[in-house]
Length: 157
Image (tube, rainbow, N blue to C red; front, side):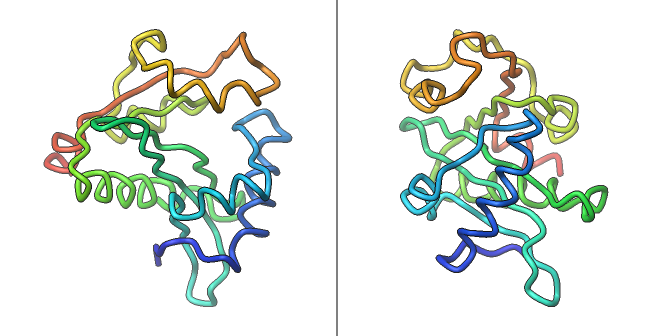
């Protein structure tokens, strides 16, 4: 089941994101950042309410949002949880009238399968780089940038 994140999820989200951040696969989030941006997050839970996955849709500009902090518990990978979370975020972007969604990722193949295409990072607005300042890899970012048209992806799936 996919639902909006709740206050009681923050510690589990923090643990899941930082598990993958420790492996260099995504940018970790502090508790403070998670509380500040809790409304951005969707979670996937199983029938016992165990949180198995998380993803955030962060609105960047009037016509642009970012999918970030996508993580699925290692024991639950390969079950389309990530795909379902991305779809839920794209449906939310559509609800807000946002047609372009981008991601910065080390899992470009996964996002290409979801309808995202490669773009030049330099084409993204400077405003999106505020989180990058906290990244240990800044300014030598080695993530790939991808973007999709929400309407096209939702139409095709």
